[in-house]
Length: 130
Image 1 (cartoon, rainbow, N blue to C red):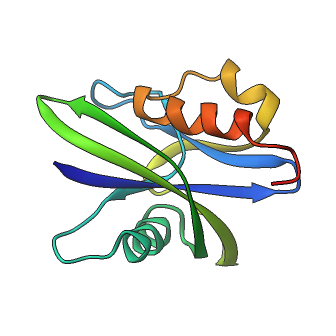
Image 2 (image 1 turned 30 degrees about the horizontal axis):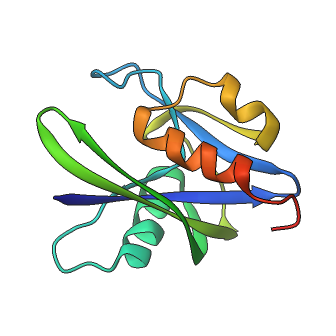
Image 3 (image 1 turned 90 degrees about the vertical axis):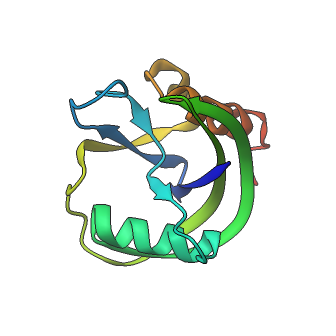
């Protein structure tokens, strides 16, 4: 099973979400940015690399938020989402169509990729202070 990571980046009471480009079967779906863990790569290192490559930003990766198993194009994956703090860099949309800062209460109104819905649910279950 391949592992993919996702970053839960918070700014005040809002979370950064990204909309996939209009390509493939996940076209136009919203997600928490991240990507596939390369062979021999640590999950946190993957998240740092992916965010630098896809959005041009640097992050510090924190604690585990949520996980989900899913299938895509006949392959099994495990999504692992971690808290991340944006520490540097300037946002550039290199792989996404759009990014938005969204309050937790508004997240369910977005058409998320199925795997990312587990992250949304985890965020909605968390107390506002944590």
